[in-house]
Structure formats: C-alpha cells, structure tokens
Length: 68
Image 1 (cartoon, one colour):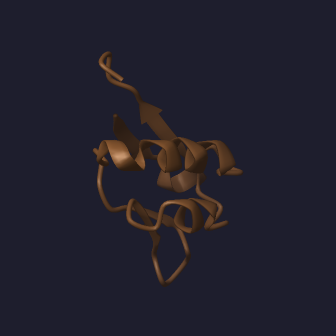
Image 2 (cartoon, helix red, strand yellow):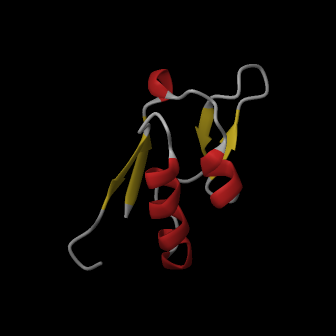
Image 3 (tube, one colour):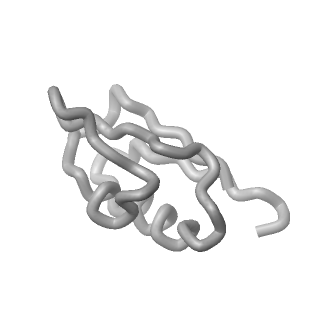
C-alpha cells in the first residue's frame, strides 16, 4: 500500500487523524492533512482505507499493491 494526499483538496475536517493518528496528522496553522508515512504497515491498512473513505474532500489516495 502506498498513500498520497492532495493537500490543496483537504478541507481540514480531521477525520483521517481521528481514524489513523499514527499515519495522518494536521498542520497547526490551517489543519491541512500531513502524511506521516507513505507506506503504513499491514496492521494499519484497514484504518487507512477507512480514513480515505471518510475524507469529505477525497484528498487521500490509496494505491494497493498486487500482493494485498
């Protein structure tokens, strides 16, 4: 799994941080998403997928590897 975020699309709702705080954070000045890791461990994949679905701006993009 590889993650990317589209910072300009982010509306700073913070759903990703609530669901996967070890993968996502928010900038203090404006609340925009900060990606802490582009390749989270397998134990975080479910939460990352949920974060992407919960994002109101669809700013989180998940690329699955062929082995997942």
